[in-house]
Image (cartoon, rainbow, N blue to C red; front, side):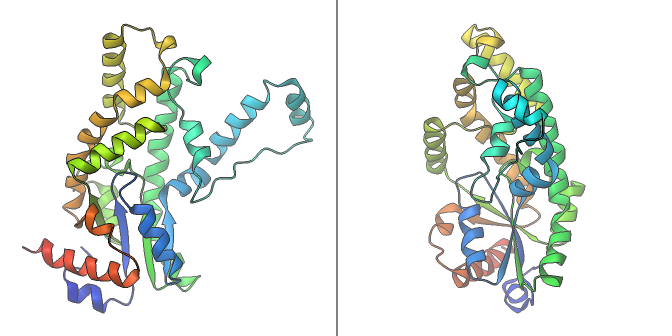
Length: 285
């Protein structure tokens, strides 16, 4: 770890962290709060994925849909209109809409193998965006003059990193302190309920995804083209959270762990500094 004690952390000229954990446990809340203090550069992995690495895929998908509408098709082919993604830190919907959900096209689903292709694209994009972290740490200090740096990782980081010795994690931990935000069983219930109310596209490991897809088709006795996309991703969400837990734990071996209930009490950068210092000391016991 680049900081091994509270003393190291408190004395550091630059405090650099990567927040890791499931969406909904506080990563983006902390990142926004730290950014708003004016002393922290906020690097969003999802934003980097959706702009630098998957931006062209996203816009091409918009164009593909526009070409189905005669009025828009003629304007697009004559360069009379311009289609772009308006992705922001707060609105990652363009990325989610491209990932999509497998199933019945009449319900907004896409062909399963097309879905797999997009999942593979996301995997490569996420690894590349993680690799860019060190570059942005330097850029934040050298160009913009920020003292501190927070990397808001994607919830799927544990799906693309293969354990504590993974080269991607090794590179990441050389420039930032990995900080896992760990939830409880009650938090899992809360996340499942929230997801059931508003299911959103997810990234899965391909072997896990294919296994769950086959299991769902068998249990529901349904053909792929007739799958309700929202029902499928709701059906497997709790199991996905359980699948991810040991993978997050493995990543946390290279950093520290914060409890989600602790994070909920952070109100400013000073609170954050204190909690990181406490967690560093706790990790030594």
